[in-house]
Image (cartoon, rainbow, N blue to C red):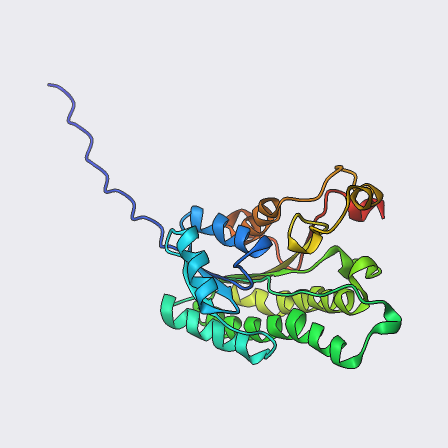
Length: 256
């Protein structure tokens, strides 16, 4: 007699979509991160200062991306942003603290008001967003946070100024502190320190300026290259990494 046919195995249920909020994601590195995550099936929260800009970007990205607005000149706004995202998505599996900025100011020209504003946007908003996400992730017993720092965090501020460098150095320190505390709850926290990236902030660099940087790989990064590193840190491929800082700088850090 012919052998019986093997029993059909039930198809595995598709993995649930991960819910990830990316701050400062209407342009540049943040937008590239949101695009990368949406393309692999994640439900992505796109954040901008104006709801119109965030919703337009989310529509352009597609894949279930949703727009949210918050002005991080008030650091508490980032806490409310996370709460709004969780209310909409039902959970938060990943948070990318990408929002930030700065401008070149000579040390002698720094003011306390300017210094504090840089810290509000680059550090304090990441602090309050991370605290809000951490509360939810602890209940879930899972989650990943990625902070976008800078090569400036690891040395002199250079062309970005002392306030920017100090705020990003503090962000790296905060990353490690949270990573140590959150690990026992199954939550990971890492950082990415990009070098020079082709964004609005570097558009003014001349070819002479670029050559003077002496980047070992010979060019600035593309935003999607930084996005790939962030996507890795949010994935199961990095499930045993926490408290780490990955330099996405074309080798600039090792040659400086």
